[in-house]
Image 1 (cartoon, rainbow, N blue to C red):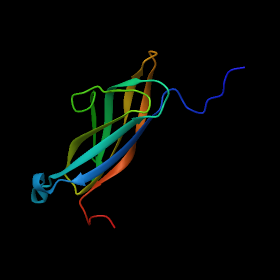
Image 2: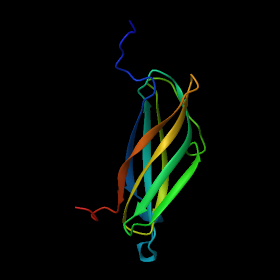
Image 3: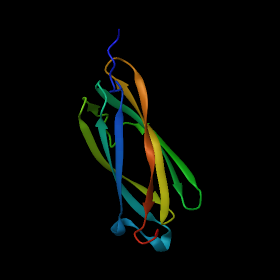
Image 4: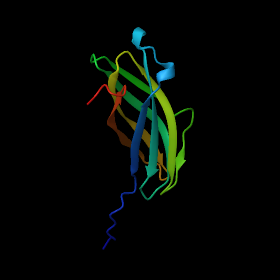
Length: 130
């Protein structure tokens, strides 16, 4: 009888912290710059390399921009089980509030490719949302 295991072989946790970058923003020109720091943690049983990212960025006017690319911040990090990886990047919106969501595609050491969702998070100038 196969052994029961509660731990999935492929599992990456994603959490995001955001901040408004005042010094790079120009609200009078509808330019709002946000930084976001993503923490990835391999909570699965197998090491995996992050291959690609896919972002869906939506501003308060409903304008949607999709961004696809290899890796993150020029890297394709390999995460061993239990290991984490943190990076910071940015987004520019034409409104003071917006959202981002997406997914990462990863390649596990056994050759399996799997995707990990990036839960939607809000980008907002402080004191814009209550």
